[in-house]
Length: 295
Ligand SMILES: *Cc1c(COP(=O)(O)O)cnc(C)c1O
Image 1: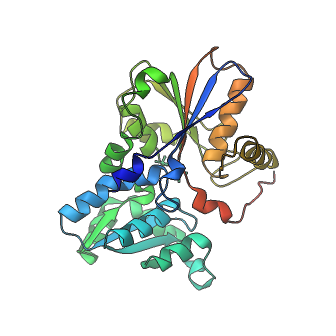
Image 2: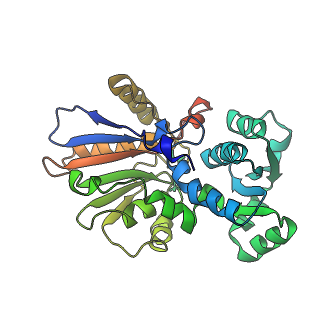
């Protein structure tokens, strides 16, 4: 895909008074719409779709999905048609939010399905049926996680990083990105994932993609669940943005940073630990409604 752009990825060093060293890999700067980890997840899928002669890309997502936005944009860029199966029948007749508007502008054909039907997307039989129904379509699973996505995410780290960083932190949704990072890490590095949603099932999902054990996952900073927030989280994000000119969003990267800073304050990391934070992008979703989690 556009590797020349990926090569311009910059690292930002955060100067703190603490005894750890923090560096941010700004994957958010790859592209405004095909941003962050989604660039790496789509790269080999698009190459494969092209190789196999598919004309259309078909994928799934929620109404605020960064994956939908990135896929719609990449499909148009590379001359594919695209179709997005979106969770929530009720959205069909509503004004589109900015993510869906962007997808539509990029020519994505949006199909809205009920939450029940949407759940079928993981069922292999349903997917076979879908392939029969749309023979011209290359199907990418929800969130874009498959073997080729993980292959792409192995390019987020480079060999130079093996000796530069002790701990690598990233946000976790489906687990594809962290799986790629784990697979490409050095054995003595530790990969720490911050789950954007509640639950232990993600550990098993990640284990399906990697045999390595130099990683751990916490959902302690998910703020109640996927896309939920707390006033503390929003305040934290604002402070980070002001202090470091570092834009974050509240679904993934904000929670990861929130967790890292909390762990630092609790002296979780040994002194002089060199930490690399993967800024996985997602800023297209930042303009949108924020729902405060009221307990
Ligand atoms: C999709 C997304 C993630 C989660 O990636 P997974 O591979 O699904 O774990 C993390 N951060 C951002 C900004 C995302 O858009």
